[in-house]
Length: 438
Image 1 (tube, rainbow, N blue to C red):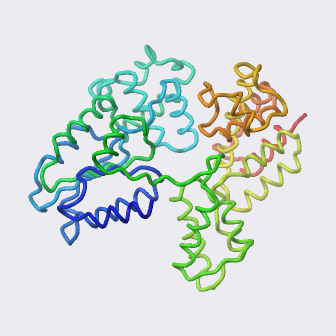
Image 2: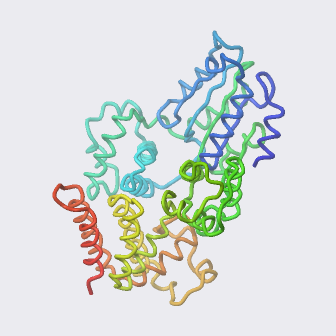
Image 3: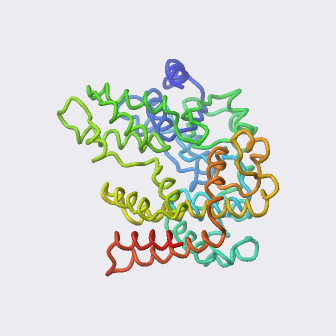
């Protein structure tokens, strides 16, 4: 990745280099590469005058193309940047889009939820005019399967999208064709299009043609079977920041950092920088520094906590809760993580009882799981095969009735946390004791 970017930058300036560049992968790497590219193609004090930035989730392609084809009055070069370009994402089924939208909303990822909702509307054939004229989400009830059971949640997401100015845009196929036409026709002299995307379908014809005739940089982070960033990549990332800050780190502190890192380099960098600021003038980062300031982004504690709940071990579960609260975790975040895990377990339990009842056997190795359960099986709880395997294993410990009861308890705890007069830690302790009741 670094060598490919370095090679691109060497042959890039205001007049030279590819006219269309697509960056995709990890957000931290994508934004870092985009800054380096813009520094090369728009140098000098007037660089900002020659750069137009659009959000692909809200901006119609007509506006983006018009900015490309209109000469700049203040700069010899015109660079159009499109963030969150939606035209390369893998196709998703409508039912998957609805579930993705609602799950992202419940997890607090509201912008991502809005993007999934716009994709859902596009798949339903909604136009911008139809979206702007509609009064509320009830018009979706005619065509959207599953609307009635999620009407309240859909209306909340609908209102958020309206307030944020999101629009469905044209169908992805139409705008992909416009991109191909633009590439075949060629951009005006001095114009450049920089596209930024997090997920792409490498089998799509637009991606293949850009790879062949334009410039595409894959900036994804190497991940292990569970979907987490590979340990080697995290270690190199940590060491890079330590060298820059001229700090050393104790072996136990290093292990603690690596175990607490999440799945996005952007948030990992924020936690490392926060840790280095906390250390201050000290030469070495200690385990106590990490435990005091480095947030556990991996949420491995969720699995430990659900394992304790599955074994009906309230003392162990309460110990996990006490440690989390002592580290400054917000009760609603803890509750949200528990709720997400319970939903995944409920989904997995339903699969075990129905679609997979004849193929799942206990015990089953991961190799056997890959052979017996196709990756495209409908209803799998995650996109990672190994994460699905672990979730199905954990779901074996619970009955469907238990998991449905857990969701009711979580909903009750959510109401209590958001009401005055209840101590948050007491609410969470009560939830765990109820979930561990025989």
